[in-house]
Image (cartoon, rainbow, N blue to C red):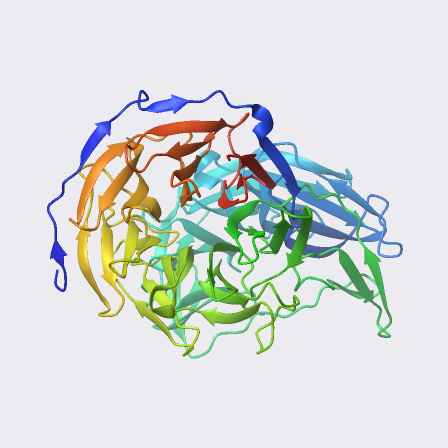
Length: 626
């Protein structure tokens, strides 16, 4: 490595155990439920069908985090609806839905891995059982063959399974690829099953159901270096379109073709020809149904379904001393004002449909970094809310920071007058960049592969040294397996645009998952790694060396869960408590023990006034700490 000096690893463990932690008798009433900010749904889709009486109706499938997914049966004449829920916990997401020729609606539920079916004849949501245990917890695609057999491919192990509706039996064909994890199955005209394998090396694997033989057919490309897609043409044959050529799949072979037959485009309609859509789909609300007849006359219905709540992914203290945050799937920006107790779902803040991973403040504006694609949105809380991509929009989506960053785990504003992002890369890729956006010049720049096959993960700023501290993760993008064994901490000179030091701890480190610069100028952070317990560490930039380490309270340190308090102490959040760290002695005091562990994606929020904010699933919570 060049361009920096490397310091010997100097790190000891102050005390591995619990005796350095002073539990405090905490009043459980200190944990206050502020409220549920967002009650949205995701993966909402509409299907034309019939009810038990044979009358035309619409079906909607919807996903949510705070409760299981659900199916709506909607009367297109009145908008009246019935709502159906599955019975197995963790059936939150409709990741694969298929309407069979007989009108049944098959649903692969994540992350329970159950196969459900809404059967109009029974007028209920039927559970057919587990697709293939833990090997198929995230169904990706469902298709149907000429005999009515249902085929399900899944994420986790690129699994392929079939289901016979007549017998209720599953046939499990197992893993289609030993490295990649995603599979998307298509039934070919000849009865073979072709599956698109993603993410690191996109390619197609064909199964012959008669023999059980599996073979890779056609080209294999590397994500980021080539492209490959699979589709069914209007002639019912399957086609591969790739950067290495086009092919028609026949049996276990890929036949080169000059051009592929495009997929048939069929607009779904009710029996009378009426079309239908969610008017508010762009806003990711899906509560207004519009039905338009063949003469162009439209009617709308407000759908009064029950939504339990949308998980909180990110919390942030805005420049106006309000608590801001993002829901997850869909991404909606919300605000809580501690002064007047106002809770408001502001709406979408990005063209991303996932969630904001991190936020930062600069010159009175908020910079919101979102997944997928690490897009940046700029929001001025002092102005009216009017989301868009055009100048004058507020918030305004200014697009991707680069072509590789995908999950912007941390955002830091300030150094060089810029906004810095540390990100996990795109699906199937390695090497998460450090990147910046300059609000004055509008320049975007990224430092690719600055940590090789690892990823930049957390950020802090050393004001005296004018250096950026970057903590990394061993992870690549989704669908990959780590290529590095150890995460590192490095110092980045943003003026010289180079690393000036890097090092790590004398233990397994898979993530530096939180960093904060204390009032004394030292860096404090939390690390996780393998079977080793999570630890709090201290780093001295003056000697460029690690110091003592202590074990945090139980519950696991929450990402970006460290911040300075007004009393000079450092405050942290785990899944089980709020704790106080004395930066001089490394004494740890558990000051608020949660009545139950934080659920879902727990987010650590800001300290505003006397309270610290955090989330449990879809609920915003707070505790008084001063």
